[in-house]
Image 1 (tube, rainbow, N blue to C red):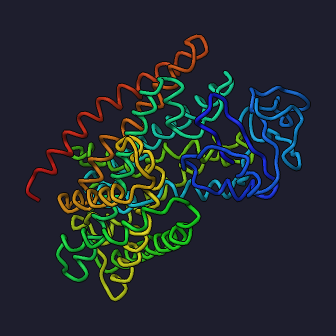
Image 2: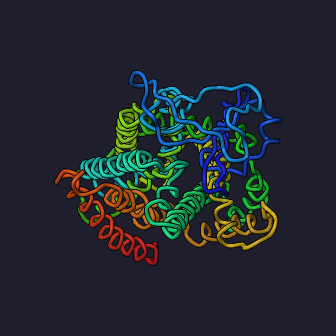
Amino acid sequence: QRINHTRTQHYFCVCQKSQNKMFNQFFNNKSSSFSSDDSNKSGTGRVVELNPLVVVGKPGEEYYNTTSPPHVNAGEDIGTTQATTAHHGEFGVPGTATQIQVAVNIFISFVGSGLLGMPFAFSMSGWVLGTITLGFMSMLNLYAMLLLVETRKKLESKGHTGINGYGDVGRIISGRRGENFVNLCLVISQIGFATAYIIFIAANLHEIAGINRAFICYGCVPILSLLVQIQEMKHLSPFSLLADVSNLAGIGAVFFQDWASFQISHETVTPFNFRHILYVASVSLYALEGVGMVIPLESSCADRKWFPSLLTKTIMGITSLMAIFGCCGYFAFGSLTMAPITLNLQGDWAAVVQLALCLGLYLTFPIMLFPVNEVMEDSVLSAGPRPNRLFRTIVVIFSATIAFAIPDFGKFLSLVGASICSILGLILPSYFHMQTFEKSELKMWQVLLDWFLILFGIIFGIIGTYDSFISLLEDN
């Protein structure tokens, strides 16, 4: 499925042979212009224009009102015709993913390096306060993501099409500046997540072999510089699968190590420590950040009507996992808990677990930058070939430099969480929701919640960012 962003109207090509295969491209990959050659190469199909939905028949069996584009005569087929049916919601092109597939994708999108920093965050704030804060931030984050889903649905009901990502919502509501601002925030957040992976790798390899952190950080550059040149997600799929297996195996092994350490010896743990509530809140927001994937994930659903419920249940499960993981790590190592938790591992299998997680996060690095590579190139470079190999290599070197300059994994998570994640996860969804709906369409409690998220995001973002920055300047 390719969307032509260079024309004033959007067209959808339904291809019998390639409909599912083309959809497997990464959600946010920037689509290229459609041509008849693409259709001939990938399969047979008919080009149709997506107009606002015309409701006919029973609910769930609505069909789009389709007309041929100017360059195609009415009724002219470029092959075999296939009807386009909106089986998955009130508007939009149907996806193919089942509930289980979408739930797995949500889990993979949200569970990452932030989970490995939760035990240390709980040791700072206390396990009870940490659990409460994590739950509160998860609730706010989830509500904001659901606002983004509602906003998209409302925009589609007004006739807007081609809403494939967060930036598209910003463009429709706030123009080109809105799209650029959203994309800038996404770029910063993705680079921040990728940089955290290098910090994690450097900390663990230094612990295992005593290698200088500079050699580790910049030693990651050569292979990563090659991987970030890849333009199609399907070529990264083997690395993604290996990364997911390594991460899950490593996280499972950490659970077993926590249990073994707790049985040997453990100290009294602190339930509350309000001095570090900002820290645990920032790490929690970082760990739960994934708002940029909400619209692509919803688009992948075979039926978009069940996505809000599925997202709620899955996020609740992920939050519970993070709370259990944080408590287990803190209970096992007490005041000696470190960030990341892998630095506390001991025994013969400790190095294997650390190396597995290092491999998983290393291979996740190019996947994390994949959706923003072209955005960065288009924003910074005025002209030239794509991909720009030198520019992408410079981005990797820049990320490695930040990782070397900021060795503290936990404090870096706090900084990213309090700053950019507050904007993406709390402020912008609420602002877009208020701008899309008329006041008469919203209940009073919805308006109050929108304002609360905006004000809370601004205040928390400023105070949390300042606190994290000052903490980074301290001599640890």
